[in-house]
Image 1: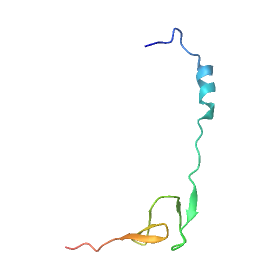
Image 2 (image 1 turned 180 degrees about the vertical axis):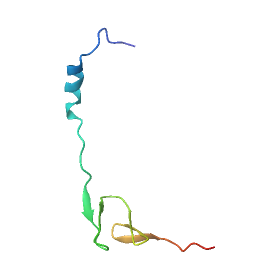
Image 3 (image 1 turned 90 degrees about the vertical axis):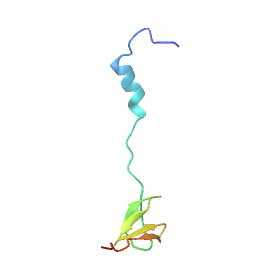
Image 4 (image 1 turned 135 degrees about the horizontal axis):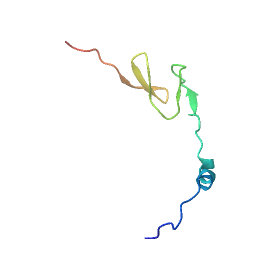
Length: 64
């Protein structure tokens, strides 16, 4: 397996990493609740789990 003969300089490594950027998450508004949430993710609103504007799961009361 080939190995580098010499160490890469810091500048060379920095040039390679110039394209690594942080991007902001894409947000959308739920049609049922009107809440802003991350796209393609389920979100909780008032104890109910919503996905694509529909209730997927409800929080059941805790039995003692």
